[in-house]
Image (cartoon, rainbow, N blue to C red; front, side):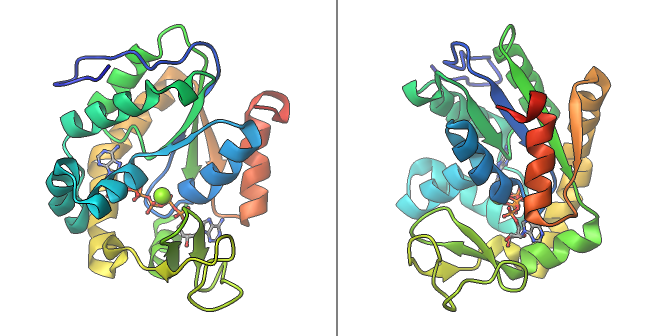
Length: 230
Ligand code: AP5
Ligand code: MG
């Protein structure tokens, strides 16, 4: 089932926990989500990855999202909501799932809250100073073959240009150009920060210091999940 024009859909979830990982561009959402989803044995659902897949495949959705993404803006809510609710209605999400990069606006958060009514969920925010974020995006290297994430300085591949996990070719995201990163950070402050405040006001937001070594951040995230478990 999908949702058009902010109509709320079923999430397809029947009991497992839904983890919601928030944070600005370059905070380490993808890096941590890969590990956390593997640890908790739930699917990792990144709206950014879903859009990049659509872009690569040249789908209608990809064509619609392209300009927004490459300019550092947000893809319109109705496109995001349709894509997301379709994805989480799939069978593999029945036991829970991890959201990375969704929600990112107040309407997205409200649609998700409504869809998750009576379901177990946990919202985690990775906080990282803006000065650090710029360097993280600037050095990021992504794999063409899998979703693994390297960094030229902080997490360099063993062989230059080659992914440690699958030996795929590494590439830089177009939206990691300095000017686009600046715009993405501006958009985060304007569009996403009010949504973070909405979660903060509910009293259920767990804030994690993302400006630490990846292993330390991972332990803190696990600790924030009850008793260090999923
Ligand atoms: P998306 O792909 O979600 O990008 P983002 O939110 O801007 O976040 P990033 O992926 O850039 O950063 P990250 O937090 O995942 O960091 P990472 O782990 O890679 O979205 C892209 C675009 O799609 C958006 O701009 C928008 O246009 C569109 N879009 C997506 N979702 C949308 C939505 N819901 N609504 C509307 N539009 C949407 O880490 C970054 C680098 O730092 C890596 O190189 C990594 O190795 C390194 N690193 C990570 N952790 C550490 C650490 N602890 N110490 C040192 N280095 C680290
Ligand atoms: Mg990411």
